[in-house]
Amino acid sequence: ASSVGEGFMRNYDDIVMSELRFPATEGCYVILKPGEDELFERVQAIVTEAESSGKFAAWRVEAEALAESLGVS
Image (cartoon, rainbow, N blue to C red; front, top):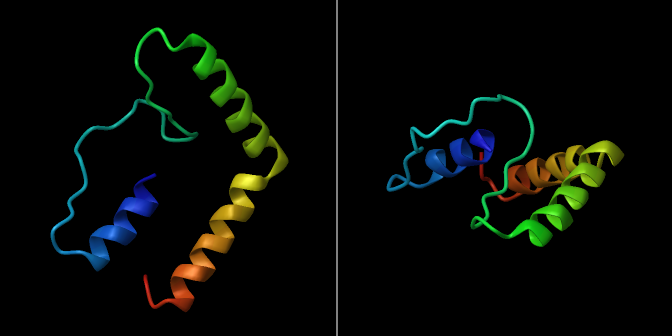
């Protein structure tokens, strides 16, 4: 996610953000090798469950609090 990348860029001078952008501005992306259909289906189910249950949102809040407690902005 760009928010994660931006945090790394603020803290490490040798990291830059790629100019590659996906067409949608929301959601999660997982990049797999072509032909990994079974793996894709399993990952998709996990991502869908984590988004719909609110786990991703909770993980983000926890990660931001941890980063702040460590002085990482």
